[in-house]
Amino acid sequence: TPRVFSGIQPSGGLTLGNYLGAIKRFVAMQDDGIETLYCMVDLHAITVPQSPADLRHNTRELAAGYIAAGLDPAKSMLFNQSQVPEHAQLGWIFNCVARMGWMQRMTQWKDKAGKNQQNASLGLFAYPSLMAADILIYHTTHVPVGEDQKQHIELTRDIAAKFNHDYGVDFFPMTEPVIEGSATRVMSLRDGSKKMSKSDPSDMSRINMTDTADDIAKKIRKAKTDPDPLPASLDDLADRPEARNLINIYAALEGSDAQTVLTQFEGQQFGTFKPQLSDLAVAKLGPIGAEMERLMQHTDEIDKILASGAERARAIAEPILAKTYQIVGMVR
Ligand code: AQP
Image (cartoon, rainbow, N blue to C red; front, side, top):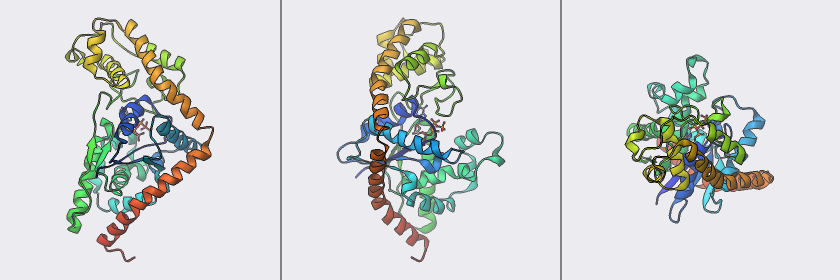
């Protein structure tokens, strides 16, 4: 049976990019016959400094976002990573399987460490190895992610293959990334060449799931665009990244595709398109933000949901770790 795992870092507030690229698709996979595990990856979040109070708040708010967006704790296992210690335990084994050179090639490492690699944490460097453990500790078959995570999933497959080869076993599966839809890469509202991100210093670059209707309208009104009207065909958006981004966001929010949106708005100026995008965004995101706020009044309930999700996840992870230790030759 298919088993789906994915996670988001509680390293800030949820963005529209996280929602369209990840959570909305997590919800779509929560279906009969598919086992779904969705995690708040707190061990990943601390690869860059986080204040303890923020980390606690962001973990619970992320859980609230999952639930408000439609993840049902009765159907999906929702938990935070540090509650299932098998992630970190398998992560160590994978640190000894993966090669330094593999990690050095990762574009996320290069982007996040910047010029001063010597000063980045060891955890940030090993991030993809822990991510491979997050996925493989459940023998996950499918991982829904945004485009930016494709390289890490390929590395996960490399680690699984090397482990299997080194120990002469056929134990870890070749996990498939699931990267589909019109919003696999939502771009910054200020710069069409940059990914929309929680950690961008400019709040105007992103829409947060907890933004008010006025904030959303203002950010879309001020979003960078060009002076041309919307074309009839997608091909004509090739050199217009900001325009393409807004069209993709509209399509993903509406659940259609970019060409359908262009057919509807062909010839219109951004002055008329943007208010309609705002209305759609407010209609789709407003109720989720309000429900997140309501859930955050009851953090004890959230903690209970996470504890119960972690218990169910551990029941899957424990025997897989035990078998891994046996393969490696650890005396138990
Ligand atoms: N802009 C995006 N478009 C589509 N998908 C996105 N994702 C993130 N940004 C976009 C997807 O969200 C999931 C969780 O991401 P994450 O929070 O674990 O890490 P990230 O990719 O590094 O996200 P951020 O927002 O950019 O966080 P910071 O700023 O802390 O690094 C992943 O599936 C990702 O693809």
